[in-house]
Amino acid sequence: MEAQFEVEMLFEHEYLVRARAAGEVIETRIMVEPGVLEQLGLEGADERQVVKETAVFLADHQPLIDFPPLLDLADVIASYDDFPEQLRRHLPADH
Image 1 (spheres, rainbow, N blue to C red):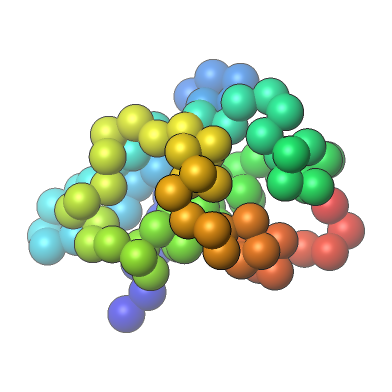
Image 2: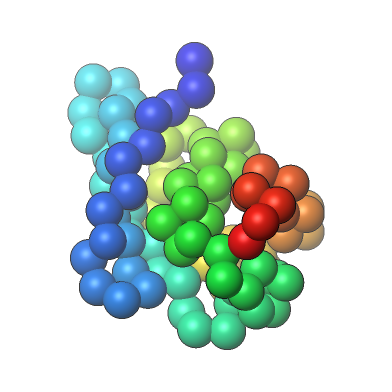
């Protein structure tokens, strides 16, 4: 069963992601530093959707319980070679 993620904007470029795992709520803060979307070729993309798709991607690669409390999108890019391509594939084409 695919995890359901709630994404809440905390500050500009910073989001809180919530999901349920093993009967508890998992929370992770994901930062989208300026320039990262440009680096990915996703200028103008909805940051909230980028964060949600990032959480979905990570859930496919590790248990939710192992999500770190704070994560920078640039770290995901550095850790997973296929992440940029997968992210582009799952975002609407009209970004």
